Length: 540
Image 1 (cartoon, rainbow, N blue to C red):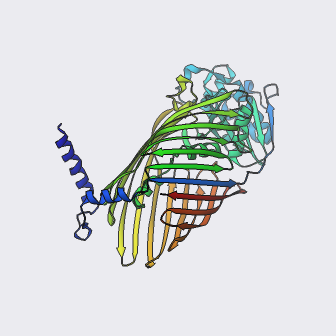
Image 2: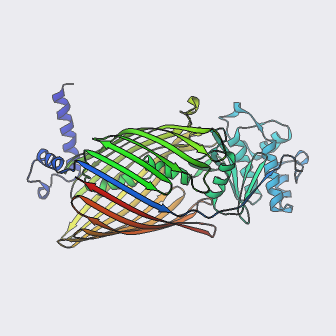
Image 3: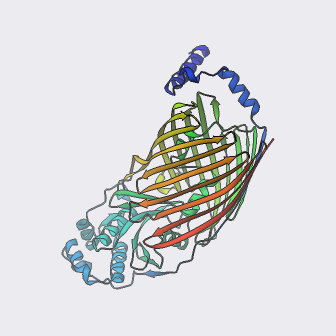
């Protein structure tokens, strides 16, 4: 194909997008050609931008725990003498809660591990008991954790199989459960009991004892995926590498104006648990820094290096495109291990959106990343990954101007790859997030503007209600936002958050201060954490 034909196709594609966005409406025809607008925008962009961020966060409350090896303990029910799984469950009401935990741990420790059953389906509970009685293989750790969780659930103790990271650095799975006074973890013959109802704290305590850091935990009941928990260490890591697994970038591509980028951008972060320096030159960037573990974290510190390409390309009134790809390498120092664990991975994403000032806008996004130990055989396998994600989605909005008011309703939909079946560990795309909202922009005078954005999000495991507001007068503004979630799954907490802060803007300087509170509610155990943040941008 000749270059001329390629150019024609690109221009034709842009024309179609323009028409879809209502760009051919008579009232929207620009007085200047698109090329001239693009050149003027590029000329007005700052040459250099320096950003400084500082953030102070409070620490989480402590929790006590005890660890018990049940291998040498007497099993409360003699498994060799029961006639069936039904017989076992019928005897369980006569056991105390502690006896039920010991029974589950003994059954887990008696399970025969067999890597040949790596892709086998999770067996029935009757087969599980039969195999225990006859020393036959049950499967690998995830099969054993799933059968153990089913046993506990049938004994009226809420339990789930949950993924984690073994002390060796590879993927592992064990059973988490709720007790009357807290939580517990069953991992073969090991029983860890905590006095907190906070699920994430319990998992952090387990991982700390194992000497390994986990960025995410996947929860299953039977073979079915239920919930993905990103740990605080995982969230700090994703924030460092600028990876957003939510549908927020889809929405932002619809409602945000084109962001003028400087030729050279320098970002410096100095926070309670993070220090980093990043440099972006015309899209090519490098970044290095350190994340320090919080009090519950299994991690002492993590050094990271990232390099890649990230830039926004746009044609005013038509389209904007955001490619983002990078390589990440680092080392994790654990609190309970002498040797460090390496981390290596890739992330990539592409956001494309129409850019009409009025009427219809469309957006689409594809994003993915996998980060794991640098053991070669583990890199392609998501089961062994510290973090993996692959999502694709689309969004739509429609901007309606009414005098000094602009109303822009929007909707986004995202699909994410999750395990379809825990036993076989087959993966597939599942609808993971649906969002709707409306942005109201009200211009009360020449220099005064007020905007508000109520929204609703539906995820697999929870619903979120929230809102954002911004008031601007001349060079001064106030930003505020808040949210609350309602859990749809037993092991997912209700969450809430609120932050507010003033902002000063001039042509070459932006200074913002923000105070925020975030909290979780695990079965009535409420915990809040606050933060104070300062951000300054200098452009020239």
